[in-house]
Length: 198
Image 1 (cartoon, one colour):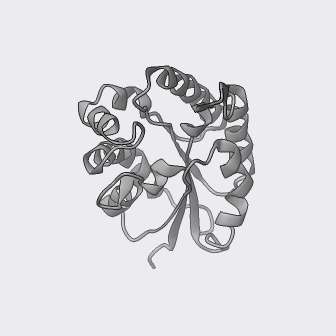
Image 2 (tube, one colour):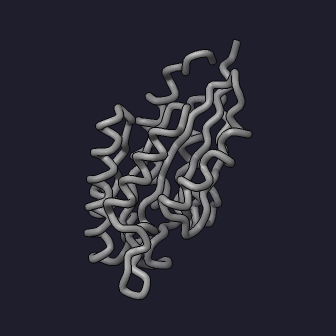
């Protein structure tokens, strides 16, 4: 019997694939690359921070991951946390890490966490790198798989060129393909192990 695998992908505009003229983003590309079959719910919302995702995950995931299915959750946020508005960070690093910890401690399904990618602003990239390290520690302490992408994409000429020629944050199709390639191995390994009761 085929497993009924369902994955909720929670996050921000990078999850939504903003800027991709093919409207697939990294989530669509990773899902298409397999394994199949799997139902993927893209729950990316523009401008959302870790606090926003923490506030809505239950309402989003519970209806989509009913009892008896192989339910899973991917979490990908952080860039908006590091954005400065009127001289103040939207979410300070310690609070951002605490939001991720609270989410991981509450979600009853297996979770895969994707780190925040770099943008075109060096100062913000330094803040992203700091949050990335905190997220990695939070995940390691809980045995949750974590995929850091900021360091690799920062030196990826395709990603950075598309970000710089776009809105300063989001890439085009090729950039999202690079991000998907970083996520895909962890995604496949994570999905390969059935959840209890599925």
